[in-house]
Length: 622
Image (tube, rainbow, N blue to C red; front, side, top):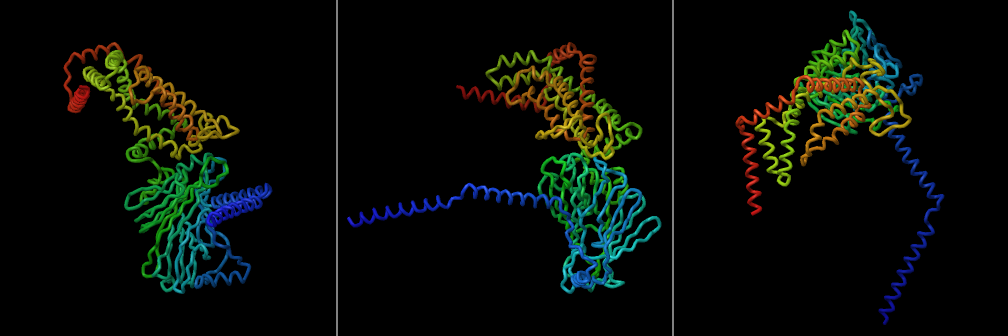
């Protein structure tokens, strides 16, 4: 009885404790005002995080603290921090290097290029093209000294000395330990060239620099936006590099962050679609750690940078001294310009395309278009090149249409076979193949010509968006053939389409719709085979995909597809009405069916396999 009473008391106690806890939670629950305050605080935290993320996308790379040279204490602290390099005379300012095509400014602080501007080019909104500006780039050496200091050349002051060597401008930037002991950056700019020689060397520092620890070269750059569509520009903005002999590799153009460590690196290209910042070295970097960070998440007119690139490469001392002969290239990603520097092979940084596609682009379409555009307006040159390409491929178009005509002639017999063996798919396929074999018709013969055209189409697909010669060249209503044309600005953004309407993609979509009506119409009339794609669906889907996909692409590419499909339609009409005679084709097929046709090994093997499958099927029924 006592135990039972104890159990009841325990239960009552637990209930009371639970009730008290519930009451406390109720009393202590936040009021509506407190909930609003918590929500506001959370929104502030999220906004601060977003702001911090945006600031990292717009903040300058070079974060070295400036020294107030008017403050004697600050100067004394600087000299104490840099040790022996405090011998260098400290002064703010930059030194200009310029020729007919390139303007550069080199800063006393860090001895590096802090401004690189193209003289002959402007952006889509008529602003000069800058590759380096306002701290978007940083070049530095990190090294240790024998008195246990770790120094970065971005923090060092250099003394400038500008001289002439013939027609060349030579700028020597020296961070001195003594008058005859220094670390030197030597720049040499030639007339009318985008390439300048760049040498990093030391003199008399074998007792200053700690040779037991590696010197690390770092080069960081945020690619400045140049085009009106930042997502389109970003698609062709990539870190490209030459390594291990003649290998050309690229980091991802779309990943949030892509990193690689490579060996025997000859040059690095921080490509910004139509312009490139390239660092090449005569003595290859034994290793280099490369990274590319994507800064574009969506289409926006407010985005300032597309990619953030970074390279880290160790340099070796020889006899305690440093000598590294390199070259800077700040200029257009133009085959005509880059091809002048054959020894460096930096022309390979242009994305011509992979394998045979790139070869066709590089050695056929690029020079051919260059020839046409030398005496024709650029838009007309595209039209003429398209006509030439389509006429050259007209025999392939003829073969494809001939195959369609033969299939059309056989359609009644194919329909009869389908009806006769509608409940036996294996037998239906056997009889269809027999008919094709007797008539001398191959259903694949229409596909082979299309496959033969793929290298041409892909090469042209890569040619138009990367052809520098099309940049800011107008045609009809298109202001820039290397970018999208606009006939109407939308007051909102359509997902996957954009905030504008381009006319050339609309025309190209209409042309491809009629082209597919002609090429797939016959397939649509024939009975749909199991597992085969719905041709009617494809016929409607393809123009819509082109309309959305090409709305932000180069108008020159859309112009090409419009003219190409238009010409193909006329060629096919000419073949149908003036070249091919369906009655003659039918008569020829009937003659072929009368002649015994020898099976090849593949056909015989396929027939035997199908017959065996049919026998097994019959055996299973028994």
